[in-house]
Length: 188
Image (cartoon, rainbow, N blue to C red; front, side, top):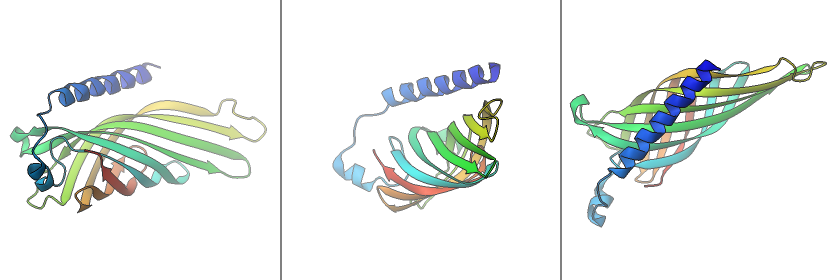
């Protein structure tokens, strides 16, 4: 229970920090400047669907989504960008005797490296997640089966922008699925 409370407190703190960063965002840019902006920059926000492979116990595939927003530039750290990402996936597994459902929900702080080619957006991230597991065993039902826990997330990934508002997405790491791929749509 203590782990869950600490995890929820960290997630709440990250949410408050994200709201403060959004409130301090600069005023909207002129249309020409907006059109010229490409890649993961200040004010950027996207959402997308992902498919995850491996890392979820006996489950082979997980389906989920990601939401990320750019919080602020980090000039003292190579002029990269700090982003906050929220993700969730769903996977299930079953055989003739048992079944399980796993729903990991995670929050990561991502550092996005600044490259000369703004179509490529590499990043690394650290965070925490909360995993909900429910299961059933033949003859026992769900008695003594299932658990919820806080877990560590570490990942490295990349977006490749096909167009200013459309990107391919991929990440590898620990926490939830081992490899995730997807498509992201720019909201802002």
